Each structure stands twice: as structure tokens, then as C-alpha cells.
Amino acid sequence: MGVRHGWGRSNSAPALGGAFALALFGVPGPCRSFDDVSVPRDGGLTGTADAAAAPDTECVDCPAPCTADRADCDDDPGNGCETDLTTTSASCGACGHSCLGGACSAGRCQPVTLASEQSRPTGLALDDTHAYWTNQAAPGDVMRVARGGGTPEVVAAGHTNPTGIAVDSEAVYWTDYAAEYKGGVWKIRKDDAGKPGAAVEIAPGENSALTIAVDDVFVYWTTPSMVFRIPKSGGKKSEVAHDQATPGGIAVDLTGVYWACVVGGTVMRWNLDADALPEVLATGQAGPAGLAIDNANVYWTNMYGDADAGAQAVMAAPKYNGTPRVIALGQSNPTGIAELGTSLCWANNDLGTIACKAKTATESDETEILATGEQGPFGVVMSLSAVYWTSQEGGTIRYVAR
Figure 1 (cartoon, rainbow, N blue to C red):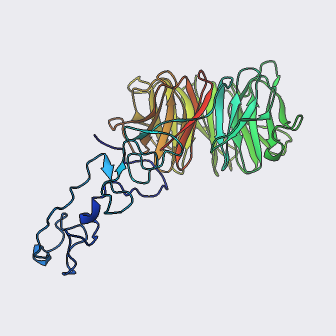
Figure 2 (tube, rainbow, N blue to C red; figure 1 turned 120 degrees about the horizontal axis):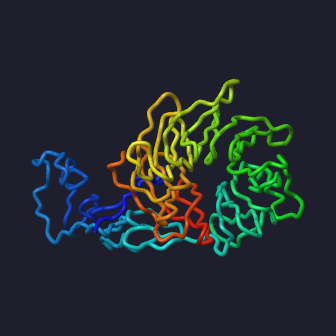
Figure 3 (tube, rainbow, N blue to C red; figure 1 turned 180 degrees about the vertical axis):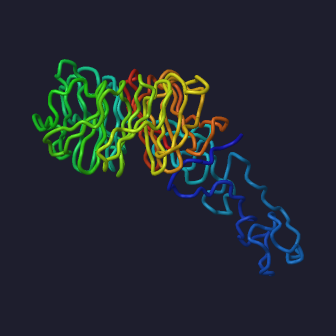
């Protein structure tokens, strides 16, 4: 059987997988001689050394190379291919690929539940120590749990319909989606998490605040037709864009704010340094919802389809003057999307899967499925070692090593 080689494990330690026991690691023994220093370290199997340089001794009782589902992960010739890559959590699919507390089955890491019995968890954010999320249904709490596991904690309780969430080094920010100007944009210092009355409404009376993003100075958020920003410390809000048709996912970098308009079918950008109208990066999209950015590109999910093929899709476009392209077709109501390093991961809300693909992939390249059987997966974030998501219908916060 094949095993996973981790195409998207950004900044993770290189796998040693597939080591071939003592004969291939240059360990002296009955099948190896160091009498001739020209003997290649791989035993000559690569054909890179002059065959005449090999010793005259004939290998006797040489150990067989490891099979595809086993490896010599400890470099100990005495125990040969000691590691089962199909079931070993510390070396799942490849030597050194840890499942971070999850099980390993058939060479693939299995999801781990961080929190359960939540009330329609929706937005999701990470910092170095915790995962944070919004419980959109009553009692409307903002929550967190240690990324290594533990008891979930209430960050702020009793909101109407908390939806989007973002964090920085000091605080947690979220939107409260409520009609008749009862919604708002909220903030609480992490050190004050759980303290009654500690949350501050920095933009009160916002009608149906939806998604949210932060940079070093401002908080940005969307409503069904507008995009706004306000200083983190509070003050006067300012309009970024109006007449937008249900802006969904939002992100910000050093130069601009980006958002996707679900109903309008557009992906937009507003330059932070220019007093100008927003520019259109993509048009004719069918339900662009989740959105992520890196240094060069914008990525989004089309819940209803893409402009060309009419199928639910994951898309990409350059931040400046480029043509949208399809990364993955045939998705199932894709919602949240995240990027890190060379990889993209997203949630297929209807099908109940967490899927990933290389950023450079095309629609014909295979999509990797990290999790199946999820109940309404929605928000997605990535760390160097794992993918995290909320499951709205399942009421869970889960992750899987990548």
C-alpha cells in the first residue's frame, strides 16, 4: 500500500521515511565492508559510483529492503524495519510525521477533538497557545481551548449571535450578528478572558456585523452591504466600501483589505494607502465565500460554482492585475479556507470533508482529503503542523496533523 509523504507540511522536519536498514545506511556488518573508501554510502544502488570501486566481498544474508509500509526510523540495524508506517502515531506515513496526539490508520493521521457539545461553532482563530471560536447559537459564547487539549473556557458570554473572530498578541475580537442595530464589534484582552463585564464594544450598534480581520492598527469587518474599519482602541469608524453584495470572507495585509462578495460574485481589494474606490480582482464568481491571502495571491471558495465550469470550486487570482484560475473543482459547498506555506486547506460543508491542495495545483491535480465524516465543517485555520476547523452541526472543534 502507499503511504503519505506530506506534500504540504510547511516548515516541518524532513521525513526520513523509507530507510533501507543497515546495508543502505553504511553501517558495518556482515554485508558491508569499508575496505575501499570509494564505496558509495547507498551501497551502489543509485549507480553513482564506479562499479570497479566496490569491494570484492559478496553480500551474504543481506537484510531485505523495507516494504512500503515499514521503515527503519531509528537507524538501528539491529531491529531492521522496526516501524509500521500505517499505525505508528509518531511516524505516520513517514518517519517523524507525528499525529500530534491522534491515531494513525492506514498511514494517515486521524482527527483529534479539542471541544465538543458546542452551540453551532462558526468562526475560528489561532494564536500560539489556544484555538478561539464563536458559538453562533444560544447562549452565544466566545470560547477558547489550549491547542494541546484541555477544558474549553468561556472568553466572553451571552452575546446574541457571535460570528466572525480574530486575534492578535493581546486581545480577541469578534462580531455579533444581530438585526435592528443590536449587533456590534467586540474586544476583550486575553488576560481578562472569562471575567464578567471585561468585553468592550468598540463599534456598538452595528447592524448585522459578519466577518472580521485585524492588522496592527485597525479592526475591519463586513455587514451585508458594507465594509468598515475602526482603530483597535476604539473611536470613530470609517467606511471602506459600500454597496457590496453580502461580503463574506475578509483578510488584510500591509497594503490592502480583501473580501469576497457572496451574492455579488466578486472578489475585491481596497488599497490602505490610497483614497480610492475598491478594485475588482475577480467577477462572475458563483458564491465566493471564504477568503485567504498570501504575499502574491488571493484564494477563495465558490460555494455555488466557478465562472467557467459552473461547479463548486476553489479559486485563486493574483493580487494585482491577473486572471482567476481554478485550483479544485467538484467541491461540495466549500466554505472556510486557509493558507500556509505552499498549501491551501478548506472545508466542504455539505460533503463533510477537510481538503487540501498545493497552491500551485491545477484542477486536474489530485486533492488530498485530511478528514471525512465531519458534520457541517465551516471555519478553517492552519498551523505549521495541523489543520483546525469548526463543525457547525457536529458542535466540535477538531484538528488533524498535516
